[in-house]
Amino acid sequence: MTWGTYPNTRLRRLRQAAWIRDLCAENDLTPRDLIWPIFVRDENTPSLISSMPGVNRLTLEELTEAVQQATDVGIPAIALFPTTPSRLRSPDGSEALNPNNLICQAVRAIKSLNLNIGVITDVALDPYTDHGHDGIIINGVLDNDATIEVLEQQSYIQAQAGADALAPSDMMDGRIAAIRDYLDDHGHKDRLLISYAAKYASSFYGPFRQAVGNPTLSNLKDKKTYQLNPANSDEAMREIAQDIQEGADMIIVKPGMPYLDIIQRASTQFNIPTLAYQISGEYAMLKAAIQNGWLDGDRAILESLMGFKRAGAKGILTYFAFDVAKKLCE
Image (cartoon, rainbow, N blue to C red):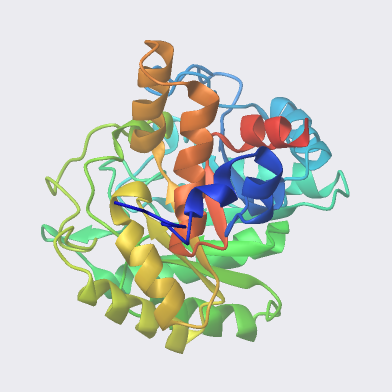
C-alpha cells in the first residue's frame, strides 16, 4: 500500500519544540493571575499549621514583610483570614465587629506601607464563633436574616479599616444586596464585593478550619443547610445569577479542582470575572504527594493552576501563590 502524504495534518508539528509550544499555548499563567491567602495571628498563637506544610500563620510584623515580598514578585492581591484566640470567640461572633480586631489591624498595617497591592477580607463569622459556623444559631438553626445584620456591620468596619474588597463567604441568602446597600449608604460605594457565590459543603476544608483555630463544629454537625450540595451545578448557576443581580462585582467558586465544571459554566454563562479558590485540602493533598516524592512539585502545581485558567478563571486564590509567582519571575 502506498501511503503518499498521509497524514496530511500532523498536529505533533506544533509540539516539537518549546518555542512553538509556547507560541501556540491557548492559556498562560502569570503572577498577575494569583491571589495569596494569608492567615493572621497574634503573638500568642502558634505559627505552625500541621495540616498545611509550608503555610504559617503570620504576626502583623511578619505579614507586612510577606506583603512586601508579594508585591516584589507581582502578586496583585492578598486575601486575609484571622486566627482568632479562643478567649475572643463567642456564640454570636461579636469580635467580628471590633474595629480593632486582628483583621482590621492587619488591613491598616498593610495600607500604611503604600504598596500597589489589593487587600481582600473575608466576610463571615466562622473565624469568630465558638461553634465554628458562619452565622448566628438560634434554636438550633443558623438564622439567615440575623446573620446578615451582623455581616453588614462586619463589612463596614473592614471597609473603614481600608480593605479594597469584601468577600462574603457565608452563603446567606440576600447578603450581597444587604451589604452593598449598607456600604453604599455609609460612604463606601467604591468597595468591591467579591462573592463566594458558589461555595460547596465540601470535605476539603479541614486544614483551613485548623488554620483559623476552629477545627470542629458544634450545635450544627455540618454546613449542609447553607452551603451548596456537591451534587448540584444548576443550583450554583442560580446562586451566581442572584449574587450578580444583587451587586457582586466578582464571584468565587470554592473548592476549585473538584468543581472545574462550575468554573467553566460560570465563566461562559455570566459576563463577570470568576475566581477559583484552590483550597486548603487541595493544597494539603498536593503538598503531601510532593513531599513523599510521588509528584514532581513544580510541574504538578503549575499544571493544577493552569487547569483553572483553562476552565475560564480570571484569577486563582492559592496557598502556592508566592512560590509560584517567584518561580514564574525566574
